[in-house]
Length: 268
Length: 304
Image 1 (cartoon, rainbow over the protein chains, first blue to last red):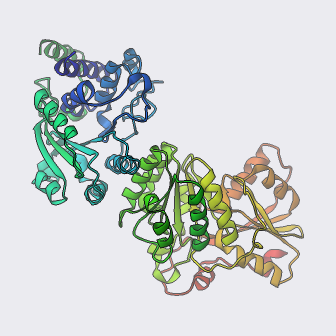
Image 2: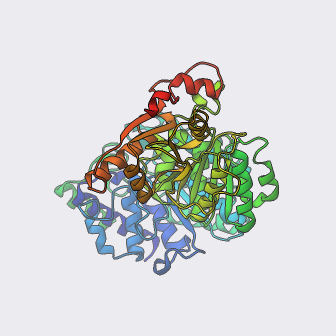
């Protein structure tokens, strides 16, 4: 399976999960689906059969509400029986609708925003002290950069030369109640990270090749500077009626729209 | 107490290179010896308690036994959600150390009065809560926290608290253990934290026929020891340097009610709770002054 197929598989799984559970946050799961696909398909050193292996790369999802996407990626990858995803967010399922560390392959629970980058910083700091080679990746949403608790580790990471830390911003430009620029404008975002002494990268978050090349480039470089990838993405990417629509931050597709979306994803 | 804490922590770090101390840019003239001796087990994260708690979670995930240290409400109330969620929900090996419990920093005002924090913290699952009564208990509790694998809250006084226990008189304290400090009578004072010295002195100076117990743990408390206290005394007086609501007195009442409800005790002793009277005190003064003002005071009539 190439990364494009992997991403399509994530989207199809997520569509079913969200539809069956009448759950929300499909838009945010779709905006990061291609990033997850490239990471899990090509980049991360993780072993579904030994998911706590000390040498594994650590991937932390901070935008916990988009967990359907991560669960799907892990399920496809074989961290658990992929059919278990059918119970997502329904009575008795361990797949709660904010990411849970009780699921194999999930490093930390999140749900309250702005919590995970500090944890990732702690892990990266420990790895550096212990001279471990693994990388720590943390994916945050644009909206959650409103949380001041993100800017504490953003200040700390360069101070302590955490070159083993890679932050990815899923910059889909829409948060709960509106456009990011109308709520708390993050621009100039790249300049902000530069001012905080991070090494910055911008990429089209749906371009598999560009993502793949960038991650490989970052991994090959030996640097003591933390890296941030501003990934320009589209909320609801992959289904035309969901794309760039605030509505699909929360809505789940009814039967008719489910069929319509599935058709599109299959033909894509 | 903070000196006893840091000395014991250094002794633990000598034995265990997984001990890690994070400070939130506080601890001047206290933490420096640790930082000098264990540079790879120490980090000042700056004035950023939320990040300190989150980083502690990350370091603990990688195998460290992490202490986060700051004054009063900063490592506690300031980052309550990080404690609940990042540390306790993940059940990580992180110890939250607040120096300056109660009115230790009396004159600095309400921001520095740690008078609600354990009432809030004790509702969080997985968290063990320790409020030692003197430097000797602090040493023991610090040693306990280092060998215990899981989240612990340590509430310390400041510096210069006098000893209540004789040096070396307590050893290998166990989770929930209660300590009998003064023995006698049918009335017992149950004290937690830094008011122990005051409570013990009050009973002894006034030659009262009463017992004094120190509770270096308020969560959990050893049920068997509680049971024998509940059976032995007609009256219990709880005393603490914390708001009455949700505090140590409440802990005792809850246990008492539940043990009675279960039929483990057949009659309930009378209970008087002493603590802070649901007020902020925005007035300068010493710790002793604010204790008195806020209602943390024993009366001779309590012992009738």
